[in-house]
Structures are given as C-alpha cells and as structure tokens.
Length: 470
Image (cartoon, rainbow, N blue to C red):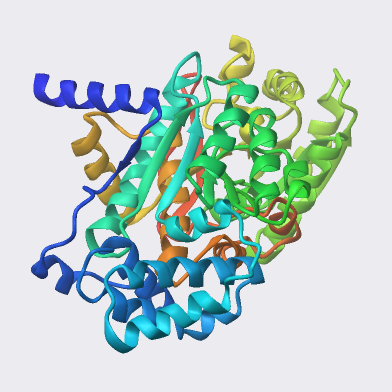
C-alpha cells in the first residue's frame, strides 16, 4: 500500500463490492470539451444509442431518436428486441421533441401499439449494454479471487470509459461462493436491472445456474475461469475464458522452437493426457520441432525405468512428461537413474508443489506451461503500472483474467453491438479457431497474451515471462 489514504480507498471499494452496487463513471452529462473528444462506435445505430443513453435530457435527443429509428441495424434485430428498441427511443425522443419530430415519433409508437412487449424487453432496451452484471465471490474463502478479478475488469472498463461512449457501469453482486446465492442474484440482475450481459462465476459448478438463468432471457454470459465444456450446451451465448490443450501446446512448442529442441514424450493413457499429446504433436509439427519418440504407460504404472531408457536412446533434447501429477512425480524420482541430464517440459502437472523432495530435485530446471494467461510486452507493463497505481498491490492471475474479459466485452461494444444478440455474434468472432475453441466457446485474448510459463528453481515454480514475437 502507499499510505493510509490509498488503503482507506481500497477498503471502501472492497466494502462497496461486498454490498453489490453499481460502479462506473459518474452519472453526469459530459462537458462540451469531453463530448467533442468522445469516440463513438463506427455503427451509426450504436452511436445514436450511445448518445441517447448518455444524454437523455440533451436538446438533441429528439433528433437522435428519429435518426436512431431510421437505422437499418434495427430492422435486423429479432422482432421483440426491435419493437422494444423503437418504443424506448420514441418515448425518450417525445419527452423533448417538437414539430415534425414529434409527429414522426408518435407515428412510430402508434404502429407498435398492439405489440405484446413485456416490461423486461423495454428495460433491456433502455439499459442497452451499458450496465454489466458481475457475480463473483466477494466474501468467504474465495473472496480474494473475486476481488482481484473485479479490479482487473475495472481497468478494462475504465480504459473504455475514458475515451468511448457509452459509459459502462458494473453492477456487482457477491455470490458468497454459493451457487444458489449466485443464481438468485443473477435473476435480480437479469429481471430487475434488465442487464443483457452477465460475467461470472469463477467455478464450473457455480457457473451452471448463471448460464441457465441468462439463456432463458437471451442474455450473454461470460465465465472467466470455468472449465466444464458442458456449460456451452446450456445456450449459444455462454462463453468462457478457457485455455485449452491447443493453446497451451502451441505455447510449449514455441518455447521448444526457440530452444532448437527436439522432444521425446512419456504419456499416461488417460483421455485427457491423450488429447494433450495429440495437441502437442500437432503444435510441434507446425513449429518445426521434431517428436523423435513416444512411450505410453498406464496411469497406475510404477516402474518407468524401461520407458525412460527407451526414450533417452532416441537422443532428443527434451523429455515431455504428459502425465497425471502423481505419475509425473514417480517419473521424476526415477530420472536420476534413467536419464540424469533430461531437460523436462510439460504442462501444469509438473508443478512441484506437493511432490516429495526427491522428485522436486530431479525436476530442477524443468519448464512447463500452465492454464493461466500472462500479458506480454507493452500491454503487460502498462497493465501492471496502472494496476499498482489503482490497487496498491501487484496484479494476480485473476486480475489478468478480469482485464481480458473486460477487453473482450468493451471491444465488442466499441465495434457497434447494440444488444445481447449482437454482442453474442461479436464474441463469436473472438473465439479460438479450433474445434476445442468452438466447443468451449473459448475467447481468444484481443491483446498480447500467452499461457503462463514456469521453470522449477530450488524446488519451486517460478514464472518466466515468454519472449515477445517481433
């Protein structure tokens, strides 16, 4: 912390989060200077919607409403959403209109008089995408994850709000780490606040009720860290910030290519490890890294000396252990006998925490890729500097996830998304272009980021910043 003033500010912010409140830019009309400097989405419809949301009492409201109603993007919306948008804009414009504009707006309302539009559709039209619901644990055993996630998310939203319209507001609710509490608060956000975007939860079990609730009303849900692929079956607007086998394998292959390495692979027969091996082999082929040998062993294997000796005879530069954590520890303990100078690589099951001293010592210098993102280059420096300044502490992995989720949403809004259905389509364009990416609807970072890489030093995992591609 940087003194009692900052500490008090952070404490106050955390208290506000725990209560479940709206946090965003001040609710005031921008000054003339600020207005001239604002950036609006390229879509004319999104521009006029932003103006109406931000300045509902401005003298130009009636003109903006008429122009908004004339935009072709509205005609491409689903019938209920289209009618709700037109009713909202016409009513807003009538409150300040006169002359010919009043007649046009009244004609729009008259044409929609018989439409069976419920109050929820009108609330969502009046809110647009400017209010974003957040449901994460802000108290209890997982509160640290939720709070640092929100702090990273806030940085992305603040970046948007400094330059772009409309100003975005985060409505935060504490899930308390309880799926029933989270589901109840999701219903409040979706029905009482009329939000069209939900972000949460951190765990798959707690995310499922949020996904179900959001899909019933056609809202978008983004989970920053859930890993269950079944979540995607709950609706076509459920997205995950998920690092799959393909992305992690590509990151490991890039590292091996920098080292001019060939590899031999020792893999267990589990379905998950088999999938990882396939992804690694494909990534190595693409990166020009030779896979010179592969041995597959049962998950229950104990004596791995023969398999390790066979792989050593292939004269590879590195050994990839693609196994369960238990089997990785067993293999590591046998390396001093079977392959004393092996350069070991792999994924997060090589984390030495929980292994015995013999295994940790044998893995000294091992490199592995984990399922978390690290920002790269100037993006990383800027993020860390701003995070330190705002929060008085170093960012965490959940902070990075929060920032990446925030960037995904704000960029989609800046490109012209008007409502949940348009946001869903914009987010689909951000998916990893792989079968795994499409199954999970896994969002690919829109800024320079890479799966985090670790090296075992002194029996501990130490984060290693990946090299930035030229």
